[in-house]
Amino acid sequence: MSDAIKHECGISLIRLLKPLDYYKKKYGTAFYGVNKMYLMMEKQHNRGQDGAGFASIKLDMQPGERYMSRVRSVANQPIQDIFAQINDRINTAITEHPEYADDVALQKKHIPYIGELLMGHVRYGTFGKNSIESVHPFLRQNNWMHRNLIVAGNFNMTNVDELFDNLVQLGQHPKEMADTVTVMEKIGHFLDDAVAKLYKEIKKEVTNKRDASPLIAKRLNIAKILRKAAKNWDGGYAMVGLLGHGDAFVLRDPAGIRPTYYYQDDEIIAIASERPALQTVFNVKYEAIKELDPGHAIIIKKSGDFAIKSILPSTERKACSFERIYFSRGSDQEIYQERKELGRLLFPKILDAIQSNLKDTVFSYIPNTAETSFFGMVKEAQNYLNKKKEEQILALGSGITKAELHKILDIRPRIEKVAIKDAKLRTFITQDSSRDDLVAHVYDISYGSVKQNDNLVIIDDSIVRGTTLKKSILKILDRLGPSKIVVASSAPQIRYPDCYGIDMAKLEDFIAFKAALALHQDHNSMAVVDAIYEKCKLQLGAEDDQVINYVKEFYAPFTADQISLKIGQLLSPPDINAEVQIIFQTINNLHQACPKNLGDWYFTGDYPTPGGNKVVNRAFINFYEGKNERAY
Image 1 (cartoon, rainbow, N blue to C red):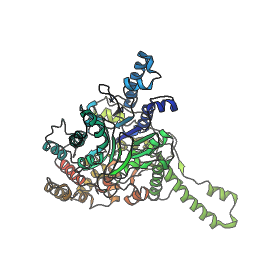
Image 2 (image 1 turned 45 degrees about the vertical axis):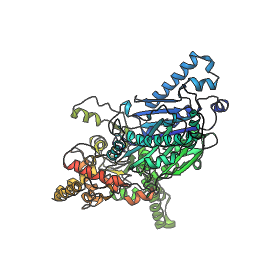
Image 3 (image 1 turned 90 degrees about the vertical axis):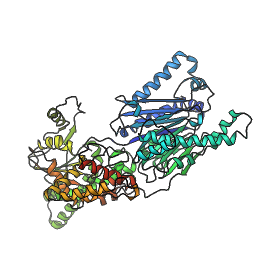
Image 4 (image 1 turned 60 degrees about the vertical axis):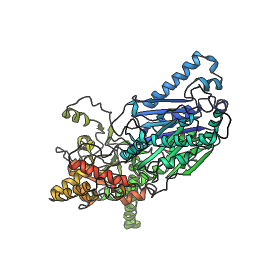
């Protein structure tokens, strides 16, 4: 994705199933869990680099002994910063108390972060907030061990206002309206209620009130608490929670929008947002990693008992397709093949754009994450050429000469590394003209890689705003002297906001929206835009499940090709010499390439939850009224 875009978050959970001295004897360190958590977070750093957090819980600690630890960072390299802090604490403690070095019991008692239950989180700040207070995990503290709650997640809720009001009606006073806080407080409310009811029942069975605590821990029904708390949630989510006494849970939304994978053996239970993180860190095969079903939760009791429980009825599976196109690491076995397929399926459109002239066409890609799709496209180009070669050879028959044969066989796709990302530019210069000049040098080119008047085809993951294309990439590619530049997006046109975790909130930011608006102006059909605004306004305050996405009508008068053509015109710099054409993946091809991830609302407007329609209509109202603000 050549445009900078923030997205997603990454979760990690580790539950050690053996005593800490087991890992000391087998792996040489009681810090086995901490080390594995560091690796899991690093293997998911693609999911967030604005902030990171870590939390741990020690089991069976005595009153007065610290059993919960948390550390968060918004440093330039937050994961490294967190574990540098942890390492410093460990080394300082052992240096000051040498007797801790080989005594696991003393390490657990006196050194923070060493526990049987560990949580990690990496974050992108989709709302522009990047203070330490906005970084997960969030902590809800209480003197009762069972009521301590630590929560982190990869999610956005579309109905935060409603959830906030529900908490107020329950008599709470939430400190802010952030979805993470409201979600945590909702879980916390029903957790408090469950603990209070259990205590009332159990104290009749015991002579010493202190003896009630282990019984509460054993009988606490986490699934029931989650069912009550999540009843009215609308959004995409994968969240992990730890309770102070040692229970843990991971909950996934009913549509499976956000990804969740897990691995378990007799030593460990581990959960992450991405499968390769688990495969690599624990050196296990693809088949050993399981995906958590939508609407379900993994419940891990303090005893180590593991169960998967249905929390909310699963809806139609709408797992995020952007995970496959761009967000998740391409090292996943399925994702690697799907990205190649996306490139392969683009080739017919590319062939049309260059009028089947492969001889005078150079193929490349921008940015590096588009490389896998590029491989799929090149392979399909090779298959196409092989068929052409076969036809030519058979047509010439047995009389073909050696020179003729070599001339045919020597034709192959021309592949070059045309563009190189040179640097991550600082934005310390505030004047727009100066900044644009800097942005124009984000990429550099391989001079001589393209012959004068060649076609140049560039594969991109997706095109959101097109800003980098217009201000940088197309200008520098034009220096190579091609007659035509074709930018091929392995994703369809992004037309609608995402409200489930990706930072794509404003309609007017999308180049596809700008192109459709320009077409309305060209066709004197701005009355359609006015009518959509009125329809959206009429739905304000309606029940979420009654709201219709009227923004679909904005695009309806035009074909995808018409919008693509206008996008090419809008993104062509005025001083460029080459003809520019932008082509996009089709929705059908996207579904063919990624059959398990059919969530496509940012392309189609088919939102998987009622709150999505509410958000997109609000986004249109904001655009129409000139309000530069988010719709959720």
